[in-house]
Length: 513
Image 1 (cartoon, rainbow, N blue to C red):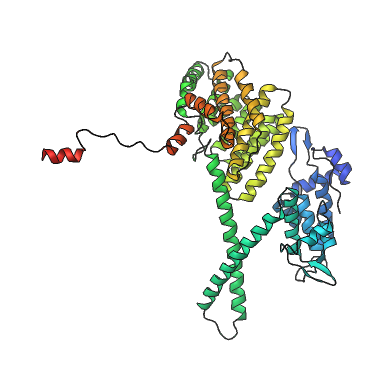
Image 2: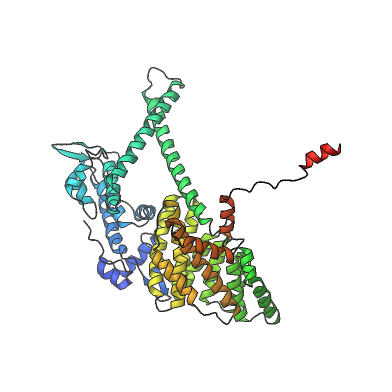
């Protein structure tokens, strides 16, 4: 079994060469072929690689030797697996259980419980693998005097083991299997009913087998689509607390932004730029204003003007990425943010890049892609938090963005992923900031305080905390036209219509006639 990489910290090309034994040219060739994930470039002259690349380089050789696959075929497999070395190792091990070099067209042999345990990383106890049989979670196959497991059962065991390591009890898998068994019986009855409608001859085995395969594949497709659709719908509904269906912010409201002077500030900045179109300070403040207003078209125009005057401006590149994300042009947004990251390694850019990965996957409608993107974003966010410790202002901004993102994702799953203590700390930190001298500074602080209060309110409301009502009232006072006011209006029953002492209009007409 391959040894797991000791550290999760990114490594240099020199460390990758030393640990993997591959030449520098070989690593660059693998990158061009898509066999390794793209490294992060903190600046123009260096690159940092995932430590999992060590395992991936070893796996490339094993896939070539054991399965006789070309590099292009291996690259496609690695890409589909998201460059997950553990999953790729398990797939390789399962394939190696088949007779011959690659098992094409052959019948796979069963693996023993001890072999299955050895395939998993880390390995579970052998008796744990065996305990899945009496629990009814996997079906054993004959293997001499021992229990045997097919490659399909090995994959199921791998998923159960991964769930167990995450704290999911076996009873949850048992309930899910029972539910699927019930659905399978219903589907079988439906299949039999359809068969009775088909014209069958005496030799009906072939059309029945083909029909079963058709129903099986179609049913698998429908189950996957339905599960993905429901998951994404739940997540999207939670996103709607901050971002509307048109990718415009719905919290805080437009009237709040107008009341704190955002529109007046935009007019003032445009007036300055009428006098001097190259005033860089005014251009940058105008970009901040359009960002707060979620006016993505004008934000893009403004940052493009900044980049025309200063092509290496990292903040403008990040702003371009944000504008393109707001316009739904995710591939272009990712390209702009990755370019900004290569130039500066700015922690906030890392967080923006992770957010774009998640938004792109959410709109794809693929729950697995969404969760994979969430994992990538979590890694980038962890790096951003670590790298922003030198700047309290940058750290606050990243932590607040991450807290709101995490709440939005966790709420549809019924989870509490952000500690109340962290949100209280953020709320206190933003409340303690002295009012900046600049117009844009004061506006940005007001919005940040609103978000900090809103995040703390969402968690306290879920907990039934006694302070939730006070926070809600404070937010409603600041933003009486915001999302909380809309939500309260929906919850409150409509007041009965006021009585008309002279009677209804129809009664009046009757009396007049």
